[in-house]
Length: 445
Image 1 (cartoon, one colour):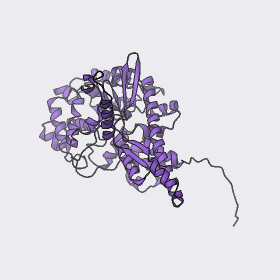
Image 2: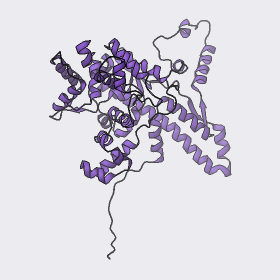
Image 3: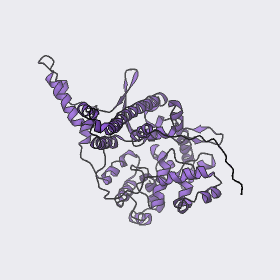
Image 4: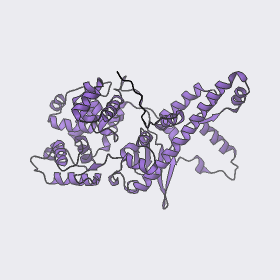
C-alpha cells in the first residue's frame, strides 16, 4: 500500500456574513421586510423602529404646525386621486383567496359565459391547499361541455397568482412552479415528471447516468426541486397580503421618474442612549460589538436593497421603454442573465431582487418577474420575441380548419416542430392576451 500526498487548486466562492444578510434582505418583499425589521428590533436593543403610520402622523402634525393663515392650502387636505397611498391600501379589508382569484378573472378578456361558469366552478372547487378537488370529467358533465374545454380553462387558472393554484396533485404543483420560473434548470420538469422518487432519494449518480448529464448539474437541479415552494396549508380563506409596489415609474415631461415606495416601511435607527450605556460598560464589550455589527448589517442591507431595486428599475426603463409607453404587448425579450451582465451582478442576485416584488406603471401594476422571459430560441439560435410568437400563433389559428380548430396542445406541437419551445400553458396565455377564444369556443362560440 502506497501513501502519497497530493496538492490541488480549487476556486471556491465564500460568502461573507455581510453579503449573506444583504442577499437575504434583498429577496424580501415589502411585507416580508417589514416583519423582518420588527423581528430584528425585538432581538437587538440598539435598534429603534418607528412605525410607518406613526411617522406619517408625525410628519402631518409638523406640517400643519408650520402652516400660517397665509400658507393654508385646501390642496393639502384634498384627496390625491392618482397618488399611491400605501397606508390606506394596507388598512384595506383583506379578502379571501377565493375572492382574490375571482378578481383575476376579468383580466382575461373574451371569455364566454360558459368559460366564466367553468372558471368560477373550478375556483370554488379548490381545497385548503388550493389544489383542484374535483375531476375535470365531473366539471365537464356538470357544465355540459367537453373535458378538453375544461382542461383549457384549468390551464388558464394555473397561470393565476399564487403560483401553483389549480394543481391536481403534488407533481403538477411543482411543474407549475418550474414553468413560471425563468431561472428553472432545463431538466427540472423532466425530473419531476418521470423521476421524482429518484430526486427524493437524491440518486445523483443514477440520474446523471440516465440523462447523460454531469453530477454537478444533476445535483443543482435536485436541490432546486427540493427548494420549490411547499404545498400551502391551513384555511384557504386566510388573509392575504395586499400588493404594494416597491417601485413606481411615471412619465414627467420628457423624462421618466422612478420612485421607490419606502414611505410605508418603518424607519430604523440606532439608539444613541443604549450605545453609550453598553459602550462604557466593560462587562458588555462583546455583546455591544455583536449587537452593533448586527444593527449596521441591517441598515446597510436595507440601503443596498434600495440601490439594487433602483438600478434594476432604471435599466428596465432604458431597455423596455416601449413597455412603459404601451403596456405588456410591447415587451421585448429579456432574460435575468442579460440584466445581471449589464448591472455586473450575479443572475441569482437579480432573481432575489425580483422575487415577490411589483412595479407600478401608468397602465397597471406588474410583478417584476413577469417582465422577464426565458428567451425562446429558434432553430438558427436567434431569440424570438413574444410578439413574433404571438404573430405566429395568430397565423396558425387563422389558417386552421374552421370545423376542426387547433387545440392549444396542437399549437404547442406545431411551434415545437418549428423550433420554438414553449409550454401549452404559455400558448394558452398568449392566446388569451390576443383575445382569441379557445378551440371549443371557436367552433361553438
